[in-house]
Length: 151
Image 1 (cartoon, rainbow, N blue to C red):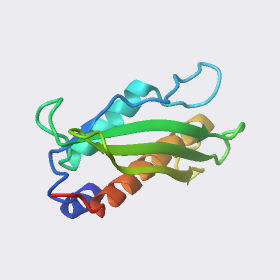
Image 2 (cartoon, rainbow, N blue to C red):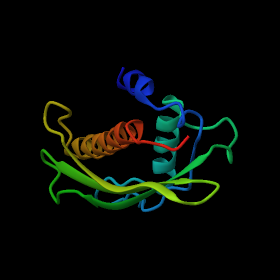
Image 3 (cartoon, rainbow, N blue to C red):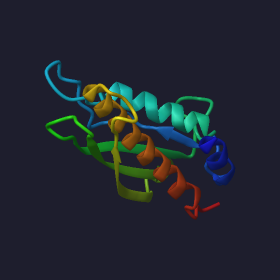
């Protein structure tokens, strides 16, 4: 439902015009501790979100704009009981022809998970991490929707 609402707010200049550059900053999940997000998983999450909102071009190298995404930091607690996860992501939207930045910002989001979400502490950590990333992507889309773009 949220993506349908956001889709209606997106400017016509962005529709089918935002190519995603390879996402960086992810880490593989350790087998001993923590829930991390790999570059590949991050890339898939952003591609799906952009595609769902109608921003991705039909051709891979098409589109007037390029979005660069870099996961800068992900803070997770040492004990996953009722975890709160914080994520910081740097976004840069550039015009492909001139490589001029139109939007550059670091967005920070946090999310908690608890017993209502799952009884398993590891699962709570995963839920909090994924929700913090979803919130971050949602905030990005809201900001891009209100971005004044040249014709």
